Amino acid sequence: MIYAANLKCNHTRSGFLEYAGELDNKISGENVIVFPPSNAFLEAKFKFVQGAQNFYPCDSGSFTGEIGAAMLDEFGITTVLIGHSERRALGEDEPFLKAKFDFAKQKGWDIIYCIGEDDITHMNGSTKEFLTDQLENIDLEYENLVIAYEPIWAIGTGKSANSAIITDILDFISTKTTAPLLYGGSVNEKNICDIKAIKNCNGVLVGTASWDAKNFINLIKA
Image 1 (tube, rainbow, N blue to C red):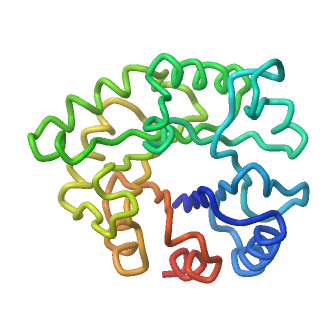
Image 2 (image 1 turned 60 degrees about the vertical axis):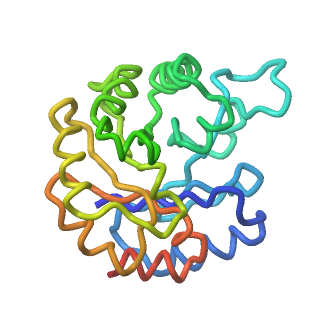
């Protein structure tokens, strides 16, 4: 199982150093990935993988405020998150997400690619068509690809999709790719065991429940 933590806009470097030390002391053998904010990147090596929440598809250049590959290289970061709904909401459209994916693929990076539908799409029953359009944007045979299904209506709302919905959608995605599949969207200690029991679920992408190291450790050990 993959346990990925998206810390979003939380933790300073000193705060993440404390978080990382606490997490590192409690895991042994689990496949854990943590995406801290870029200001908190650490050069130290840990038992977990440190990834980037965001990057610009360049090595370096005249891109004000962006994070290039050269900056990630300094910290040995080769795992990236692409397509999260919160990045899409800021204007990252399909052509730009494809550019990010293609750049990361060229680098040979490990990619967690996020897809998901909003509440209106969910309620009108067109989720699978919507996700199909998102998946057509990337190379589904890329060997270092992981796909995270994150229904937007469940992210940070405390309202996780139920097991039947998750099973149906992950089964559907599995017909299109052999990439490992994650579920994300209000994952917590109460539902983690049910989610992990789903046949085509290879792990979770955790938001709020991962911001505190103790909570994330409890979730991993559940």
